[in-house]
Image 1 (cartoon, chains in turn red, blue):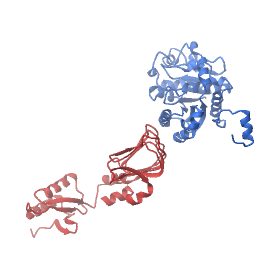
Image 2 (cartoon, one colour):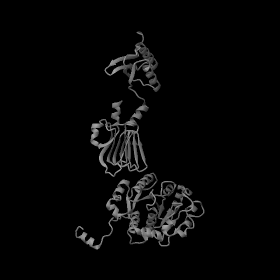
Image 3 (cartoon, chains in turn red, yellow):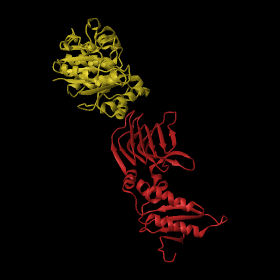
Length: 228
Length: 266
């Protein structure tokens, strides 16, 4: 083993164990080396489960390769994969990422029966009339009146918010939460936003100013960078 | 070369046909040549309101199916010059004509008439598509009721996709002043703000309109009633004149006017 180049290095860091995989060797070589190292450790049943971070450097893993890596690490070991980090992503993924994190400005009136669907954040300059609907995977900002239905975080992002200059919606939807207007006739509110309140486990409407406290990483891009 | 205007609403019973009859009559009274087309096949009404029901020989379906020429199906109005009506068929249904054949008829009539007013049936299906096919401009009729404003909004959304020369215009029909004052009816301003298209006229709810319709005499012919003035104002606005909107208040007596003049609050 001494005459063999080390492709896989395991180090203990303050976050737990980190497995560094050399980015220059072939994937097969690296996996063979990793398998060998795992076999050499041969953990005991009573040992605690250790979380590991896999650092790939400038290597891109195909889906099948990632599966193989996970299989090796999970099989007969006490490892739990916390994260797999790579410095590179596919152009395709990068474009998708960009699309998901962009703010798209749309200038129109969403009228009854019309649905406006957007990936990423929506900035609507215009109204959403009763019976109209806007859907976005990110946040919804409306420079105008919201009378219809707004759905933010449609792909399941519960941190998404809905903000409008004037709000009198028939329904607000964020991720899988739905709230509807009261049955009695009520006045709308100016410059407010809807967001999910974790404690009350429902959508609440509050002044836009609370966002600086509750949703600091308001831009989708920032948020995704922070969350990886 | 004339201009085709479709009069539509989405919801039924808001006064499309009455509006078509009266605006058309008013335009003809101002000396324009006008042709009205009823596209509500199977439920024709325009001929009844115009009082020419018993003069129908051929209808629009006969024209489409080639049984007669467009000009021989037209019914000329006897009261006003240059006003004609192309009636709908009562025996077929909306599928009897297609948007293409409709466009052909309208383009043909544009050669002879300055204004073609197309009375659209309720709904957003085939009948609506036929009616809109040949139009250059659109007028949306609504009443100050939630349901009809919703449908107007839907129709405006659909009209935006059509090939029109300008955004649709709005007529608010059957306004009952006392109800608006009590807050039981939606405000004109609120409707205009919500629909965000230009208002081309408001028409008060007027018993005379029903009476006139039943007599087959469009109210626009009768000069004294408030609704009649409203319809004539709409016609003038269509012609490009700048006419202020009618005030909502019903006429007060001489005494009230005097008091107002001297600034005494009643």
